[in-house]
Image 1: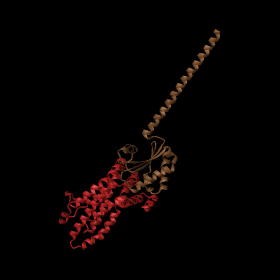
Image 2: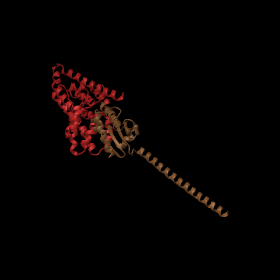
Image 3: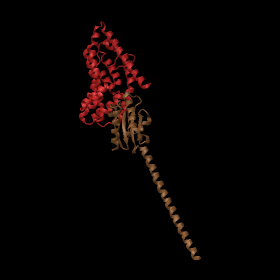
Image 4: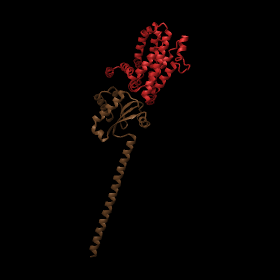
Length: 232
Length: 158
């Protein structure tokens, strides 16, 4: 972190600053937990290497949409005070219930017809592959769950650079790519390592089912972690 | 004899007139002084209410849940203000205040200063300097923090 901070202080180019800020966000404890959850989520289709990797990219795209969307709203004059207070104050608080609900949906404990999170057993039986919308949505939501540290990096450092001129509006995209970089790297790694492990199993469906259940439990555990952090 | 009586009477009358003038002048002076001090008190009160004063306030706004860096910012910024301006902090001219944005009592001042999230702000009268980003990058370095705090305070002073 100290190394990244040094680069940041000496950086002359805003693109480098945005990149470093994104990396600092990605490895700070709180977004790291959401990124680990995301890695679990995007690797649920482990029998399809390419799909896992694309999931990683789509997740990062989701993050980019949120970060850029917020920056555009602020650029066009929305009150930074209100937006910042809303997301820094509530983003993290909503994360715990959100993660637990997603986990329960994936475990089929709660049954709601929702395109991306429809019953996993149904999905496997029908061999219907869900769209990428779930992953995109997850990236968008996780990006908006600002933690105390990432909130400052985004609202206090990146946003002033971004809204200074229209030329700066690409910076949130660079920032988002950097925040999603660990997920992209792990997606690539999982796609080409665990993907093969999955294929070793004779009963790939059974493996996939249990893998997905594991991911669902991961969501619930991370959700409970946030709940304990925030409400106890 | 009558002449000398008249003379003493006129001297007494003169004395009375001088005394009367002196009392009136004193009363006028008293009214003036008290009105000035009342005005001064009124101004002081107004200053206190609006936060418009020559005093320098360093505000650190945060939420209930904070990261390790956030806590280091508070600790080192407070220490920096106290170490840089010990006399002024003692006299109350300079102050450091940490405020929790999750508490309803903070809303008023946060709205007034336009604070939406974690912020380190140096305020003097109408002037305010946001040193959040610099402070976050110096969070764990007390010496760097002193430089940032001093630079922020210098900017609101001049």
